[in-house]
Image 1: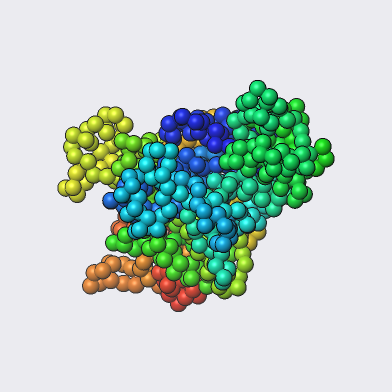
Image 2 (image 1 turned 120 degrees about the horizontal axis):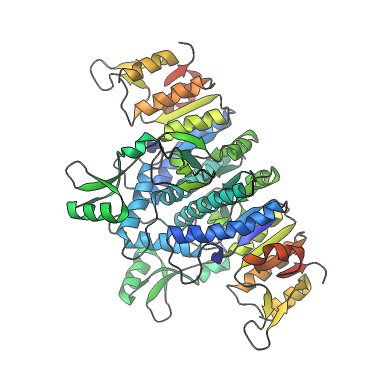
Length: 311
Length: 311
């Protein structure tokens, strides 16, 4: 099974991103995940990296008068190393407590995107520091960054969020998964790369939706379940409105219809439902969206939202 | 075979550590390594991370009034992600040019050290920024850092360099290696961890000799050769003196004798020769110390220094 961890599995909204706090949260997360291992499931774990890559990027910008700043793809790879390390250490420790000795590793993962993806014409994802109008102008000119005014607080760089096309390291991930190793991979949706005409890869400064990459990886390795764990217990219609409806299960057709009608928030539940649909349509058995705490119940069908081929 | 890359494979002395420069050097490195793949060798690649983890650490110190600095173990994991990414991308690209399609991956790797290692009583490895005497006093008091006066330029933190005891992820590395994947692992000697009485791991702020870890990994995976590539072509006696002698091959007994007589510099050729001795003594066929450019010739015995059981 592939478990896609939401950002709250590592750092909750408003928390200060110290190593201690992140490790503390990750320990709790791993305690939940180990229950799945105890139940006999093989795991591939993917995770977000938004706050972490954001901090690495800021540290680079704040030190740029002294040290060469790293581009976004390299910062993303750093965040994979950092989060992977904390996750694999905690998973091992929590499994050990349950008397389970299974190897756990994190793999640095690259995701290929299309250089001609229309997202590159219209970058929308703000990253890094806020700058004044004149600073923004300099960055625009000298670095070619696209800058936009953001929430009245100044100018920020925006990057694109292209569609994932291929996960470069999927084969090694599959081999390890099939040999019973717990594999952490595709952190933050993978490091974004584009493929030249000669087939060579190079990093690009972009972000990739982590849920869509998790789905792609789940299909590549032929996982039976795609379990997306987040900070809400279910998928809802009319979320946080008086008319809120909890969805326990829905067919792919229903999910597609709700999605098209705009029931799910774009950078939030929308991509999760889209990932669920694609997973099942590409041969996956079941996609489940649930809270971290209810992972086991969600697999048993008594919590969370299950998306399947048949209603 | 296990190939241990020296620091010069990524960044040469005096070069500015931009991403571009490092990627450029890594591309050259990978062109040499691909020759070994073309010759039919399976590869595990280890690498140093000194300048890279140093820069990540400095960026943390320079931004600490704004963002929580990460401890040394987490910075090390970040450097593994970063260097692993650049290496695996370049290896793939260079193999592609040679029409070879073999998966390449980097694994985040932890190394266990002994909490009671005597090195912890006597930390000697300076890291991070230079501080004034009064700043040093504050850091000593508030963070428990050990501070020493360094080369007349101020005070620096010193950390320990304990002996490696175990590589946590060796089994997954071995499985991938045996299945034909090119594996990048144990970057910077692995992230240093200690094991609690309950068997749980936690990171420690230390550095581990990367050559000794490379040797340990080479023995774990039962590699036939340990190839340490550096910026000199051979092991020498009386290096850079008028009486300099080039060693083409030596037995383990000879190597041990020279080492004990102090022929090899401590943090430089010394650990490489020590690693070579341990590798052969633990069952490895041949250890070779050579320059990156002469890797192929060194394997054929016409360059570099070979250390074997028999003279």
